[in-house]
Length: 516
Image (cartoon, rainbow, N blue to C red):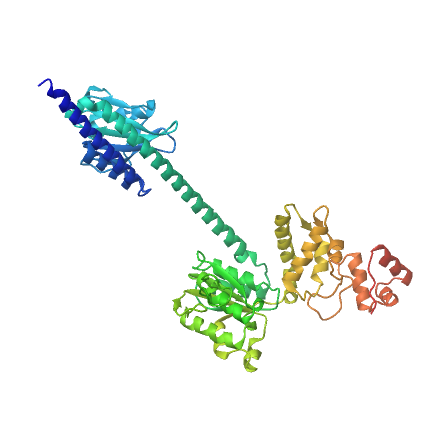
């Protein structure tokens, strides 16, 4: 019998080693399958029971403060795996593993005074192994295992196996926590970007308090709620794209893409490929398949600027997409469904174009479901000071320095005709800002930027009141010169001055005399 004992012992150890290797292999496969920690850890504990007989087991993971652990996986116990079950550092045998950062191996669990029998998780009469789940010097939790009572003679080997499994778990836990944190960071960045976009493209970014602009804002608020096709109309530079962005980012489609295309910027053959996409080999240079703007805008909004510039043949192709929500890529035969809200814009008189046969009537009615007319800047001059200050703040952000604009500069801006609308105004202010050494934009810098100084009635009709207390001396002299057709002697009489006095004023006030 004594001769057979070593053989029996050797056979048992070989069997244990085979089970240990198989368990490590299976555990590694489980851990590489997914980063859903609760499901993964529960599966790991089940594998350890099947291969090595650890019939009761649990995993705890530390909470953010590192002072306590919560239950993450439980096996072999007829109780729910509740994350409300916690251990503080030093609490019970499991808490002691966290506190000391090293394994605790007991031949009989109940022999340790720290055994928390009332929790009913482990058998006090059986052995116990608790090992820290670590990555480097950081303890992330505890793996607690209970082998059967008959396995007391191999506790050291079981503890060594448990440490190897805990190391594998630690790498997975660290990766899962990193991925979880990255997801939080991405979600937070996404939410921040959404707030930024809404602020940048919201109603507050479209400045104006005149009656015409209030009507525009009300139309935008109402139409943003629905998927209605919108046609934004107005002169170049009135801010049609801003209105389209405000509609999109205040609509139920705000989380979807906002895709834009200037229809006047491309010839017809390229326009079709840009909007509908193309298949590989559809034409020379089509080396790969490419999605068009309609597909890119799926579940979002497509902004078609300068829609009045497209040809009659392309109008028919566009009409089908608007009516059916279907398209084929260039060179393709497969019909694609798209869910896109279309906002179009034009500075053309489409009604005249329809009468002349240059624009399809059915396409016009398809686009003109909800027309929004933007007034030119000259029809809302009362908004110019507010718009100018808004643009100054915007340019200050780009230049990274504080900027300000003086009242005298604003008065010059108020009396310009602004044929280029808000875009011309922005260019003017940006040129003046570039020339400003100290960040202050005054009258002289505005004049240097190319604006001609005038003093005219804001709404036309009648002469400027030369006794208006809001006029400074320079403006009063210019107003008189304008009313006198820039004849200095006549302007002097309007101001009760002598020709010599007005000539002196023109010189000292640095007024540029115009020849008419």
